[in-house]
Length: 150
Length: 150
DNA sequence: TATTGTTATACTCTATAACTATA
DNA sequence: TATAGTTATAGAGTATAACAATA
Image 1 (cartoon, rainbow over the protein chains, first blue to last red):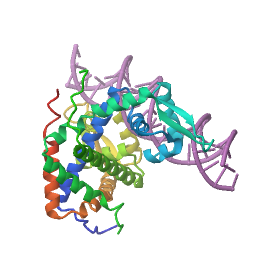
Image 2 (image 1 turned 30 degrees about the vertical axis):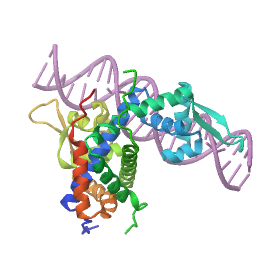
Image 3 (image 1 turned 60 degrees about the horizontal axis):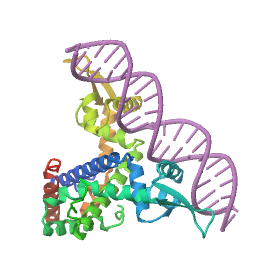
Image 4 (image 1 turned 45 degrees about the vertical axis):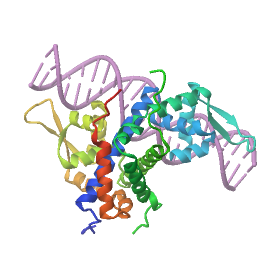
């Protein structure tokens, strides 16, 4: 509306925001590449990575992936068709289906994790002390839940 | 190949990588939300943001967005249908079409940029000195082009 | 002959709404 | 009645291949 209130957009902040944007772009690129190397889409890779830790109800998967439950059906379908995931009944609630990674699925997930070069290369140039600094700064950044609004 | 070389996956590095993943997720979420508030998809928002700086050939847009040129056709089509972008001939090469943001498109792009809360809120908790430290660390991280490979 | 942009095609992801089977 | 998962549908992004216009 009309006059903007100039929200702390000083040059330094803008530069840092831009750098974060670059990190985000790089991260995504490498994640998609790593997924593609395993013939997985990004969504499939993310879902399989979740399942490699523990079986989860379809509903929970949707929450984790921040998408509608109907989408999870299709993604799990495709992983299941390739033998990377399976559906199991939940003994305590017969409405629930637990999605779980197969042994092959866990193997692929581990391979995917290891192929994420982002983990070693960019951070490899940082010393242990610098990594600790970075950890602190990122923690501070992510601290407030969603911002106190106005 | 074969035996993995255990790429410096110490606890600290893993934690930092995880934090970066969280930042990436948060950034994307907020970007998508900001785009949706303007009735734009993420891809449309990214393309429009590029055009708000300068007109670009379709081919260049594809390179910037890291996608195939055929996809750009559709995205620009949708922006054009809403009066946010337009195609112009390139005087120097009649094969080329320059995509450009309309005045309305630039207005939306600016509004989008301002609504990216990620710029102020997470960084607002950091002092100027801390922001400078963060900038240095991020620059160091992004320094090496793509990793020296093997 | 090579390049630019487009079209046609197919697949995946996405949200919405309606459906089923449980609870 | 409420919830979990699915299906059906439609829109958008994506890559591939083939095409017209231009270089």
